[in-house]
Image (cartoon, rainbow, N blue to C red; front, side, top):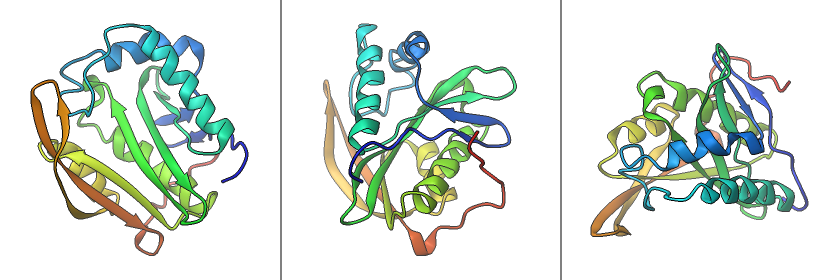
Amino acid sequence: MSGSLPTPSLHTARLRLRAFEDADAHDLFALHSSAYVLRYWDAPPWSERVRAERFIAAGRRMAQEGTGARPAVERLSDGAFIGWCGLSGWNPEYRSASLGYCFGDAAWGQGYATEAARALLRWAFDTLDLNRVQAETDTRNLASARVLEKLGFVREGTLRENCVVGDDVSDSWVYGLLRRDWQPSAEPVPGR
């Protein structure tokens, strides 16, 4: 992916994925400053609001450089920011990228992560012509592992003690999804 590629605007039955706006910094900081939400994350919770502003700026740089896309996710019913879902590390030669996501605990257990990731994966395979998408999750985060498996990802291995956050050392599972194994749902995901 050379050059810029705008962050996609995608819709599902219940969600809208869109470019981050400066006004999202407050909600983004609330999300990433929660120790409960980030208990399986590979970095400690944020303690300064400026981290949210840097995250938004980094997402814009990724899009400008053509190295990734990290849209905000909001609920269509009320416009509430509930998290984000992104692709990073695009490699045009290998046609690959890495998937990541983070949702507030009030949005857990409702299928939002699966729905948002499915929309972004459809865009990645159809628009970016990717062949492989990779993801990692802490081995204790069974809910995230279920999201990836529902999307068709295959667990490919374990990275032993690859995350150290404070005194907490943890393992991660590596997942991969190949274009030939991708099974998009019948749900339309038009850009608006």
